[in-house]
Figure (cartoon, rainbow, N blue to C red):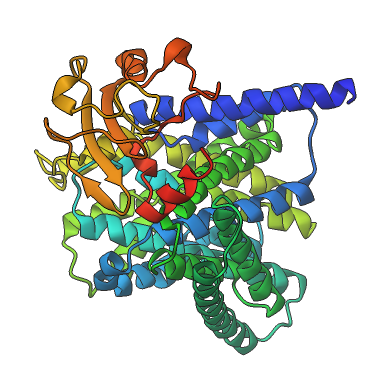
Length: 512
């Protein structure tokens, strides 16, 4: 490898790690992590010159495919069914109202033609689900509100994309008939919905019937189905993002083998794509460029937050069963994120006269929205009395999976040479705070009691403090920590966030 390649790989590794650790920092201050990802990219562009807009747009669209697919898989039909109408109204009427209002003020503030100002309004029209739930996560807020915000964020992206692409087409070809644009909208949304349903159902059928050599290939198959969904939808000139979200909904709400494995892989992959996408987008912006449009960006951001978004929410929810306090929280929770910045690359690619200015202003709007709204949503929810004083107690799985406890789960396959093989639990000298929680024996689960004998072949689950990891390992360790065959003991940390079904567990044990 060349020195340049080695340096870039090292730099990418550092940035990825910074992105991961920054999520912990951002959650403490209630600020969406995208702010820190973008900041890392902006710092990097002081040392590395990067202006490949085409590559950035491609990476951004691919990241959105993964993020929306993962969001669809995480969404429950049962939870969004009661609020599907208000969510769709927010995603359509709300986006249009916001686009028109922001476009009106952009015409005055940016001094651009009407078509261009409406284009700017469309670009900042969609909200960011990941940013919203990074801030609201763990708060005891009415599930109806969080479900509405989740469904809106997943379904308003296609609307913003359609308006952006349509307005660019209109700017380039002003003689385009309005009725053609209406028919195009109906086709894009309708065909996108059908494509998502068909490919989603096909992916469920394929995953349940194909026998792959490794369980790790099933998540890859699911991601491949997501990318295929977008590609097919784009080929039919329909909404690829809507199709991907629908495919994710179908897959996430269906009975599929290795469901947990697929979900966990997609969740981690979506995070990685978010980090990469925001850092790439940060590379395209220079701090001095933001300083040049600071007052315009701040003014338009405030108009979006306190005028356009609330107007869109209250008008689109006019007949919905939400009170004023709930509508106020929904309005203030409209954080901007990935989609507006990716859409801001479209005018650049189309070589529009105001493309670079739009990109910088949109960037400023997203940053200020994330910082101002992101750090105040929780406080507003408390002020509006929409957060319970004592939320529902988190489950043991949530505590361990989210890193809110100092304990961890491990599972180990009991081998004949292990010291505890053949002993009753009561006969063992278990260190304090180390607990046997379950035993999988064949095709059944055995409750560990004092008289239970640990047999070779059992899969034993152990809950223990992280500080006593070595003491826990010593229970299963043969001489010098090696098995009779000379290999390491098949002990594996298993955070509850990645607990697998019995079928998945047995499949993985074959590899240990």
